Length: 443
Ligand code: GUN
Ligand code: ZN
Image 1 (cartoon, protein in one colour):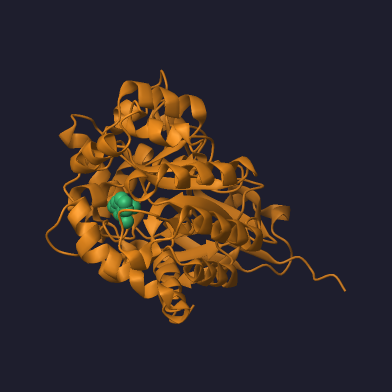
Image 2 (cartoon, protein in one colour; image 1 turned 120 degrees about the horizontal axis):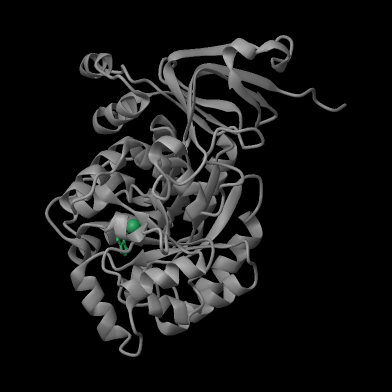
């Protein structure tokens, strides 16, 4: 017998967007309903409106979860994160290349063990949901079992995730190297097993240009050419020493981005982590190709990598799709509220003001557009998947004090992004199901 439709309803202050606040006045981009109702049926949003007009929109017998005093937002989208690096977050003292050798590679070695990978995947996803993040573009390790472990756990939770096996056939320890052919074959098998299954999507994942031979990059491009719906993720121009190394390794390429472009990796659904040291020609190419940049503020500050030029990247004459990334374990928090906090400070260093509406847009709809998933996630609107987070602006005594001073929604959002973290997340919904509740243990 067909199962009856599953309903849920949420009451609270709805905050979402109708457009890109870097390209229109932030006040025009914001959509809000101060006492609103969201109705969910079978995992999708079927009604959004004022609570006072609930009327016939509430299916009989549906409980309304009362989140008055909290904001109802689309779940956050983390466009760049490494789940295997969660145990080595906050590793002292190094910048990128030394940090990789000293801390990252030894940690990733442990994911040869599928049971260990499953344990960390479970912890990672639980932590993401505790931070209100419902979708992420995730690097696994070179081991195919690290991908199986991750997608298995994400399937169990019903979260929409993008992930892939790292490709690395040179300039890495032998215990983390594949070969161009083996990386291709293992990726192909993982695509067949996972891509488009339930809410899981595969990203072809060459770590970065220095750890792949030109042959491996070519084969990554060959995989992508087989299916336009595949994702691609890699790192781009994060650190000065890295950029100099790439110029040595690929003397024929015009730029770092051009290394990837020649291999067919620059296209829609490609996400380049960082992109700090890019020039105007690179940004024009990103705009035209539909690829995206992942701005990773806490990571860039932690590793001393540099100051991402967000307002240049978003220039209205050739805006580049951009989302926020936590880049754990180089990042220092899985909370996108903390990413927004540090993004604000980086913008300050560049002489720009990151408006709170711009920051929250980057963390939700902007991230969804970066992944070309904005037709499904990133906005609270009818027809969208019901991936939501509930934000509590009074999570601590100090935040309650500051929130009393707020005289606008923009100021409320700014207070949340500057002072908030995992404590600010009251609940998280994925595909219409509550997958985290701050006040209940064990879900
Ligand atoms: N570049 C290549 N690999 C990595 C990584 O794991 N983290 C960061 N932040 N940058 C990288
Ligand atoms: Zn990274």
